[in-house]
Image (cartoon, rainbow, N blue to C red; front, side, top):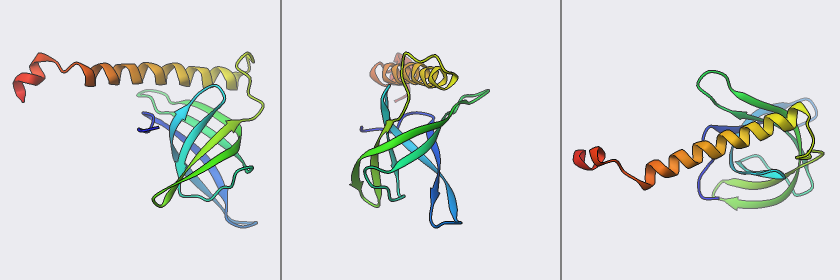
Length: 132
């Protein structure tokens, strides 16, 4: 959980009071079949539920998985923010719903982006060495 995931954000609505809600965008640090880890300054407690819209930003058209219900299972403080572990509710990998397919597509693109990034950082090109 060292780095934020590239081009992936979670959108959700945070309720301040009965009539006042705020749209929030949080960075994600982990994503798997069962849940995610997000970082935000909004206060949640373990046991709270949150509805997430995951958005993978792409050059032409973003990939959106909207309306994912999650249960906050863990809370860790980091400076003025919190890391929250969120388990997805009613989301099964074997399920062929459009939401599951979009989430699977986001994970596939994310893995490709991470592998490209690690290859670029691991093997500097000879041209980059000459410029340095």
